[in-house]
Image (cartoon, rainbow, N blue to C red; front, side):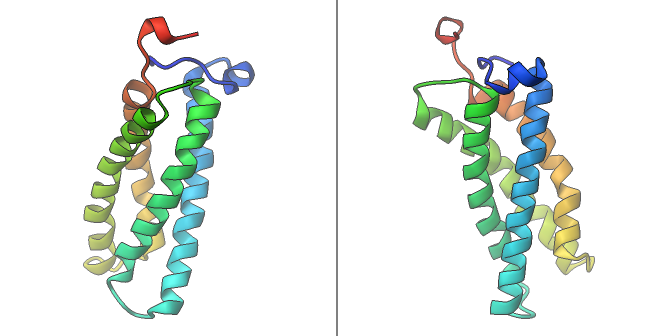
Length: 147
């Protein structure tokens, strides 16, 4: 990975483990958002198939915001370039988001999976995309900018 080390490296000593720790934490946070919005839309628009898309969009927005701050401050100790980091980070998640919209709704609508189960299964794909994207793109710094 090319970004500088963050404070979790004092605890874990290996950036991959720190990244995985924050990834698990963020996955939990994102999944809680997904379940919360799923419940909200089930009450607000019961039986409506379109709500799976709304649930994914709402959960994606809030979970990527929290993920950005967790990774940026706990795993990669970076300063400056806030907006560049933010937009790079969002580009990585945009790929996962588009795949999420392509994979999860058909699992629910065509195969009859519960949307929460489908999202949980898709989480593995998101984790792999996240690892490679953030470690090699989102928080990358030239060697001269590293502490």
